[in-house]
Amino acid sequence: MYIFSRISEDLQQVQLLIRKNFCFQAGHLSEFIPPSFSNLEITLRPGIVITAGNMFGPVSERLIALAAVMQLIFISSRIHASVKESAAAKERHGDNRGGFQYPILVGDYLYSKSFTMLCEYSVEAYLNELAELICHINQSNIHDLRNAGSEITDWQQYLEIVQGETARLFACAACLGADLNGADQQCKNKLYHFGLNFGMAFGLLDRGATPEQVKDYLTAAEANLYELPPQIDSQCFRNLLTSLSEDSSLRRMVG
Image (tube, rainbow, N blue to C red):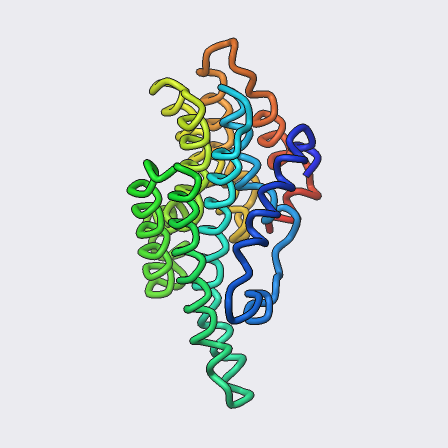
């Protein structure tokens, strides 16, 4: 994404670290889960971590590792969420291993790798927050499966599902990236709510919402940025909001 062009080299380091952790004794994870992520999905969450951290200090190896961990959590959650569709496809071919067992094992493996990476790069202080994040994601996935069509029958419940599945990860990415580089509590709170509001808009668009339905979340996210101290450069995040609200090509990538 051009929005993160200033940190393109840092994002490349994130991808190298992720690919390194895709290798394990039995082979390479791509053999079991073919990669199907768009450039937006590959870049967005790590980009938010690094951008938030860079507002308060230089990009370090620990910040790169945290960005990689957030992306591994996203990948794992997507793998687990796809099990139902994969299982159905494999059942037609009479082999359920690749459709059910492999995705669950790979998702669990990546969750474990993310925790190992936190310890390896001395970012284990965030273990509790990220464990809670994973619980919220999985809980929301369960509610989503049990309450299909809740966007019609119970809009509030639907919003809670989107928040748990999508928005909380963006909120943690922004808040923890800033925290790692020494942001004070007020800045962390503003960036957490920026991530939450941006994530709600992104998640709803991803599910087919209209621009009108996400307008209030984008407005709130912009207000969160303007509440940051004036010396904090949040232009990159403002550009991200503008792109999501106005750039049709980005919205097509989301939806």
